[in-house]
Length: 64
Image 1 (tube, rainbow, N blue to C red):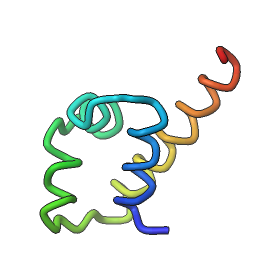
Image 2: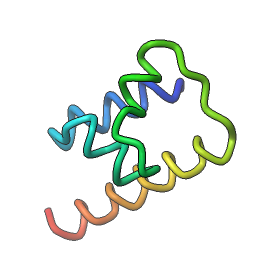
Image 3: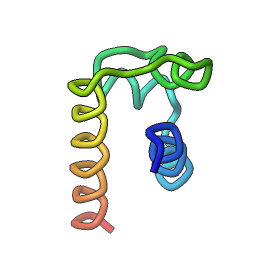
Image 4: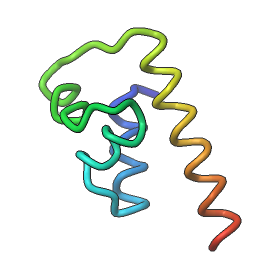
């Protein structure tokens, strides 16, 4: 699955604004907008994003 698809699914599911996601995941509020415009992320950033999504989904499961 592409990184952008994974992020967009997470944003739709959580109704989280893209700027908040970027800020919380990698301290970059422009992250999602830049990826949508073609920004390529390195492996470290991709790993941080994936970890953030997994952990956030785990928090939702416990709270939901």
